[in-house]
Length: 372
Image 1: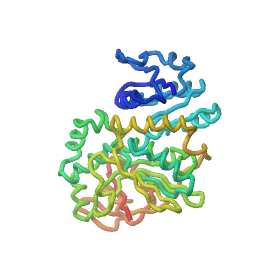
Image 2 (image 1 turned 180 degrees about the vertical axis):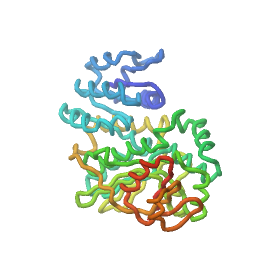
Image 3 (image 1 turned 135 degrees about the horizontal axis):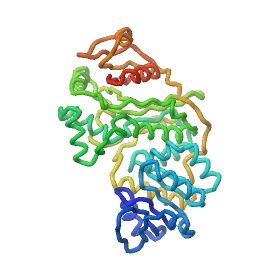
Image 4 (image 1 turned 45 degrees about the vertical axis):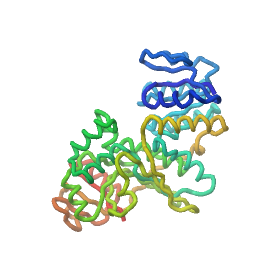
């Protein structure tokens, strides 16, 4: 396999390092904006040199972002090259464009590192689907948020202190909004549900709430009532109906999710035969992520394409009802309140779709579902 590597940052460098000792694949060209020298690969700023090189059969996209990553990946597919990417935003955003195009052109498209970093979650879903139907996927998918929430819970930090600590350790970006507003987890849930259920979720039907409004007072309320807060995703299918949403969720302090520390992920599926399975590991990092990029290259050499056939377009029906912790409520919240926790309330069961619609109109509030 001859690889054209797009990007030479954290993940790209990891891919280059891992493949260097292999004899079944080689990074032949690297598209990079920095002036670097490599002993066995041509470094260029011109993507066309990769696109027009007929000896390169696989493009590994490790640039991140939507543009020009999308244009490069689409052009590579059009040229008949296989694609491996760790870019969850790219795949989730352009799923309905890139997946059918890859099938039409007869090329492989793999993105295992896009969800769970080093866990290998999507390839596990592929394996599970060979034997059984998956009824649920979800869990802790963002290491930045888990680090912040864990630091607030264990160390007593406020949100700003925990965020700054995460940034100093490289777990959070200078602008952390994609992580703390739940968008990163949202992309990962959409991609996971598409693979697990064999569909294409309508993205607008999947709401996401983040943790940027959480306070030390909220954490104190949770502890006083025996709960720990985590940002989680949740997707289900049953009898042709689907749910999918991202939101802070309170777990009893003895629950498995409550014990997940620092920047780790815990992602779970429920199969009709195997039952509940959870996968735990590093959700990011150079070598854990690059490991699964290279695993995808090996899978392509073995003849594997995408994890499932491209499926029908479906919308999530989030009419399922949950109890919510709400701080910063109004009359509607007061009407649905069942009890008071400090300066917040816990509601009677409310539809997920209704609560997220309310939050959209009350963005200064903080909500967290209560796991039943």
